[in-house]
View 1 (tube, rainbow, N blue to C red):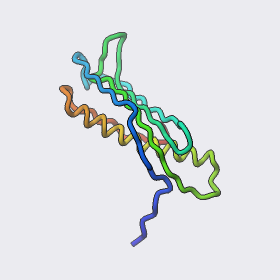
View 2 (view 1 turned 45 degrees about the horizontal axis):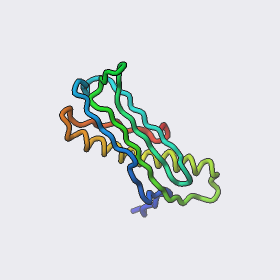
View 3 (view 1 turned 30 degrees about the vertical axis):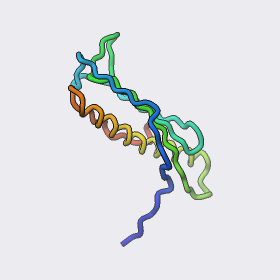
View 4 (view 1 turned 180 degrees about the horizontal axis):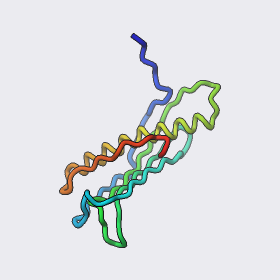
Length: 130
């Protein structure tokens, strides 16, 4: 049996700075919506992720919900010394954003499961594209 190898990236802490879910009475979960997930590198070993979900035509909401979630995570990293700072920053940002997206995804599913339109389960995304 092979020993478990420890990840070079560990989350120390995280916190939500915004969680907003508004249900639209005239909207439907069958209508198209836009999912925007944007990773921001706020400072060394900290990653922010903003997830926005919804759609509108003019002032008329089409999708069942308007959702905004912002979560920030602080990560500890142990990298080989030969890895460049640029590669380390990219690794922390992309993989940290992937961890945070999973947490935001879970929060959105939990909150919307208690709503009249039913729960929303976001697709799994590849962290490199955030």
